[in-house]
Amino acid sequence: TAVVQAVLLGTLFVLADWMASVAGLTLWPESWPVALQVLLALLVGDLGAYGVHRAGHELPFFWRFHQVHHTSDKLYVLSSGRNHPLNVAATYAATLIPLALLGARGEVLVLVGVFTGVHGMLQHANIDLYLGPLNWLFSGPELHRYHHSADIHESNTNYGSNLIWWDVIFG
Image 1 (spheres, rainbow, N blue to C red):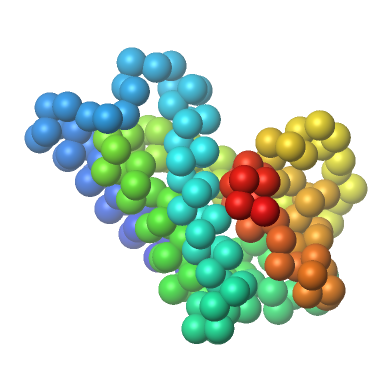
Image 2: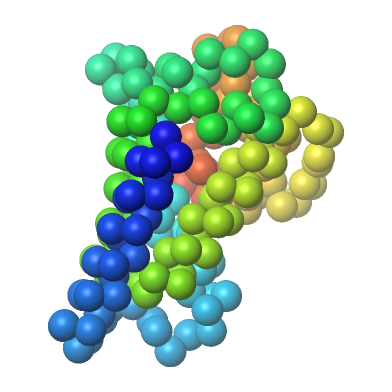
């Protein structure tokens, strides 16, 4: 899956830069500080990831690919990398293509990719980390444990990759 991720990310970085230079205009707020652009990109990109992840649980066809991620008996840091390549491709495409089409530059996409990778490992790490009020913003390890529960009512929740906002909005 690392090869799929690298190819998708590289392609989307090139696409984003090409679109911004050819079009000469962008819907993306390039004048904002990079940190704010990354926060916006996390919010926008996580909507696509949320949709793919939810489909992976609720639609039998997509579950066949997503279930690979749920085969770990115990959560540990490497669980974040246990994925079917098609699930990875769909998630990255749904996350990064909208950002590229909006004109987000490669550096923003890279930072979103790095945050998502590190955050994914933290979500799945077998550590007691409680975020308290930050649980209303981030889908951290405390909330993500429910997502990997053996109880189907608990595991069919918390679909956000990085943020919990779309879970709150869509129930």
